[in-house]
Image 1: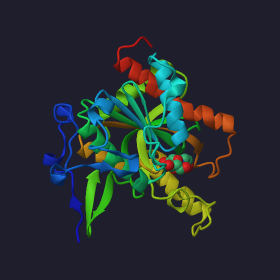
Image 2: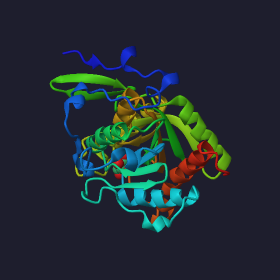
Image 3: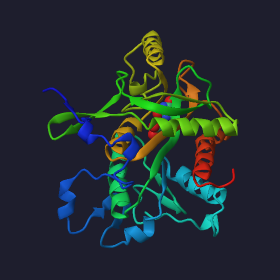
Image 4: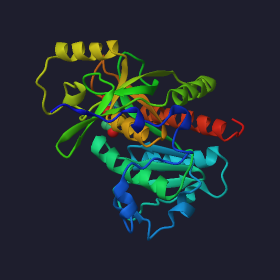
Length: 316
Ligand code: R2B
Ligand code: URA
């Protein structure tokens, strides 16, 4: 059966009217009939929590794979924005579950999403409903993370213009019932350009805009020769990665396609900012020291802090 396109103009938010007067688009008529919406994986709900008073002032959402990194980011941004109170007192809003962690620092929400498309997709369904129930407006959402680079210096930060699949197609295929629905994976171009400008102003680490390939696996799915299974040669791997480079792919990770697709459909201004831990044309194993990797992982955080301060009109 032919795939169904889920990107007809009526489904796309207008670029200049992103998000329906700034509100988040919820594209589910069934939700109106729910007496209570339980956000199960956050351990939050519309009857048990006053979501507008807890989250109504959120303007930025930052998501990333690891709970520790997202706590670290919340503490860092609390200090960078000069918010009141002790940043060390920030607690996990989702402490009732160990599926995801969520921290709030003033207008910034910092949430972990785990690894891979299924994990981030569950988180995003509940996050988008949370932002809707909380009546948040004009929210910008940014995924910060790690990735494998292709043909670029390790430590380079890649801002994604479009997420592509393993065939270098700018799309995400969602299976719904027994149909394949194809969704657009373009990210917000002006936001990507603003982020690049911020990085140029910091002038601390190389940053580029490029395509990001999103895969379902870290090993075979990313053409690694060092997994428990491998059925291809080194030459085949190199030929594939070279083709990816030729198609404009500059890094590989595991969440950007569904992130771009869902944010696009729901009218959220979204960006993906990932540091590269290695150059996949040179190898597969991540051999840098912990200290070097930790510094790399702070790069997207520094860039986002600069962006948020600029947006909030704080001196930078
Ligand atoms: C980047 O790093 C993780 C795999 O190590 C995965 O979540 C991703 O997208
Ligand atoms: N994350 C990935 O998905 N791939 C890499 O090579 C490094 C980090």
